Image (cartoon, rainbow, N blue to C red; front, side, top):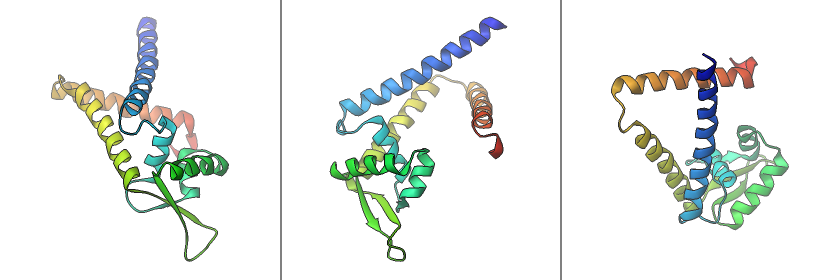
Length: 151
């Protein structure tokens, strides 16, 4: 039984590392080689439609407003984001994707979908269900560890 635990641990670590490495490689080789993984995740947090407040984005990414402000400033300079003030309350800053930001979002989303399709390509329907069940359980468990109050 211990051998299974060791192998599962090794596989989870290796898969996580590989996904990050492949993600970084695909960004650096593509049209959007001027942004980092962290920046693409900021773009994802802003979302494809509408705008979000800086507070909402910082909370979603679990980073400070100062860290987010630095990231947003860089992404504005690179042409991926735009910032605007709320008409109702000028203290509220909204952030949205530019056309270039939406394209980066969609290409990154496609990268993830292609990766999932490749993994599932040779699986039977039964194997897909087993994988989905196992991943749901893993996800639930990790969320309980990270934030027991929300489970």
